[in-house]
Length: 636
Image (tube, rainbow, N blue to C red; front, side, top):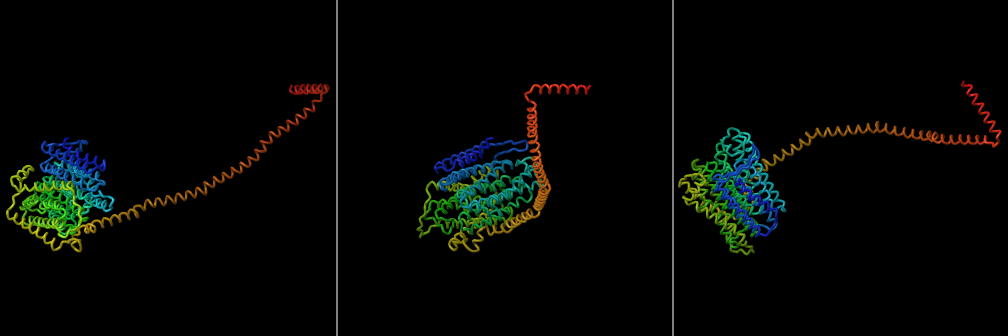
């Protein structure tokens, strides 16, 4: 269970920090160092102690985590890079919303650690979803500008489309094996094997910004520069290359997987290289370079060298993160990310110097570690013939060209510079300095015994290359550097207008996506909506119409028949009541009145009998006796 601590520490801490809200920069910086430093220590302990973890949900579902040599290396890299980047963010980004930003960045790091330690597709999916949601929140961080949430949504939807492949892969694996475990992938055959292999490849390509998903990386530049550094170096984008390298032994069994990975990587490396050369926006140039560099990693995986891909991933993180941080500092100082408006070397000499160290790595020049890992990729594809190594070399030349252009335009000296530039403080450059130091450290990889020892730790063998290819590759790099210098001197505003500006937006790929995908899908949605409103809803509407008509008819019948009967009944009742009233009045009043009159008459008659003469009374008595006797005689 202990391996769960590795992702849980930053996940829980990140949520807590985000909920607590804004605090002082010192407090947030100290907390970020403590959490991410603790995460690095946990990763070190997990690697040395061979930690594992599992969580049983049911007999069929369980989450598992373990570390392979490749995943162990990435698990150490993620918190190390994140620590420097998040520390920089605490000292540089806007104070408003800083607590939320730092909390989500740390949560983002925890999600990436979950992706790294996952040993089954279900655990991977949980981490995959977490980093996807965090990337949306971070890109949309400055949400008061409506374009930023839109960019975040664009990036989220684009990567979500690719994620469908991972969901399909998980369902196929479970259907075939009854489990989500990575170990089951190698046992697949036929359709299930194809769905799993290419579903994961699709999802990895979308996360890694490979063609045709690359344009979302430009939209992701709406986020703060620290977010761009973390996203491109150690988390979301890196996850795409990591997962196919982690699963390469199983995925490469599927027919066509290796060729597809190489094609995606080569096309992206060349397209990203050309796009980077034409870009005049500092962050977008670096974003294009990320696609290109990860394209190299896809090539290495397709060539059967996932360990080389991961080494390039780690080295790439050390130089790409500081380049984004320096781009952010330069953009804030110049008030724009336009490279032709920068030339800040005189105002920001320390930042320029640290950027130069990282730029050598991106250019692929010796003695930088980036140069070593790129040459190892060329060695890895030498066995395929000449065309593929030369294509990678051409991608390397483009890398050297756009890196040279970036460095010279952003930090060259400008003699007549009279601008009032706010110089970043020492605390803002600490993170940049740490990352530049890591970049320098990777230069040790040119020392063969050290490189071989590292390869042994990753349980792999370094590829063998020819001196001819190495010389040719270095010639390509030199040509790229010279090309970059030429463009800066002759065409410093390249990519700001005309055809080059249009081509700098991924060679028109966003427009192609709009025409080939967005508009047809939008038209399809409108058509289905019309069908739904016009045809499918016609049935219910018809029933409703008939219902309304029936109700109106019933109401009419009710009004004319039932209500009329009631009204007639009421009228009859009224008439009867009136009649009853008159009759009852007569009866009820006649009886007492008649009784009263009769009683009165009797009283008056009786009073006549009371004469007061005794002989009258005797006569009455005798008459009465005679009457009684007569009655009795008649009865007898």
